[in-house]
Length: 188
Image (cartoon, rainbow, N blue to C red; front, side, top):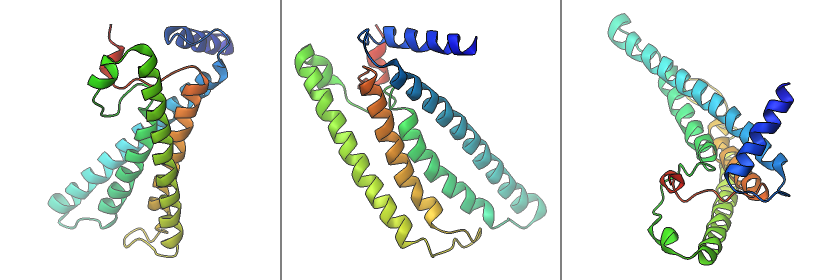
């Protein structure tokens, strides 16, 4: 039964965005799964940041001694949240954008401009992923001050986030979606 519900959700999603009947619904299904996973992971990361910072404030003002690891955990998690969040909000148009030009263009030119935008996103993700991999490799032998973990872990957020951003864009395009310029453009 769960499989049928999932199949219906994917079909509804595909028809809502006007995907052609032959569009690969598997791509939309995988994009939806990835979004759900990212949303869950991001929620848990946000909870961990809030708890670590609460413990830091509690330690400083109640106990009189702030733990050294809480600030480092929060900083690393925020970096991971920013990079994973970029991928999580792509399909819904959650990125900051100015849609005046795109919305003013005729449909044909709008399609071309959005394709150029998507190529620019893929190129940016490629550069970001490459730079993140270099930083992680360069700093892999260095340990963080408080947690004493490899600095490759926080620096790898750039590569992982860039790869997920590119993957989400590719899934959307294969599935017949064009991620909107902004979330307001979906309101009719």
